[in-house]
Image (cartoon, rainbow, N blue to C red; front, side, top):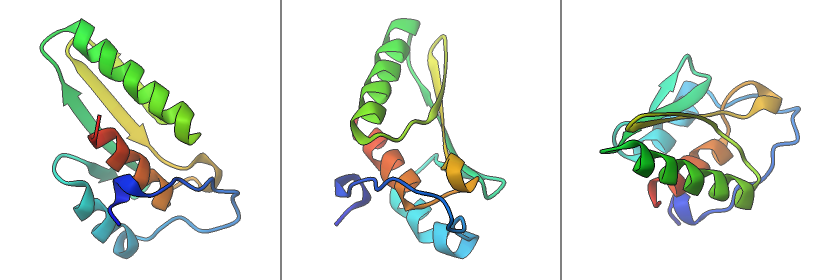
Length: 107
């Protein structure tokens, strides 16, 4: 089953973040332009032709985040939206972060 079809399971903490060896195949499933920074968070910038479309995408991501109860950092600027995802309770990445990123890709 693809990442976008899986469900985010809330992290309750008390587990270690994924290692680079564990994140590599998950990152490969996401496709282009997603990067892992500092082995801590997923990051991708999306570009749009104007502010209105960037804002609409931001709202879609926000609605999705509420549906799955997993909330990324979202930076909106003219023609650009930057998404940063990680699991705060473990100060790093877990599978739910990759699932959210895959779901964002379907918007």
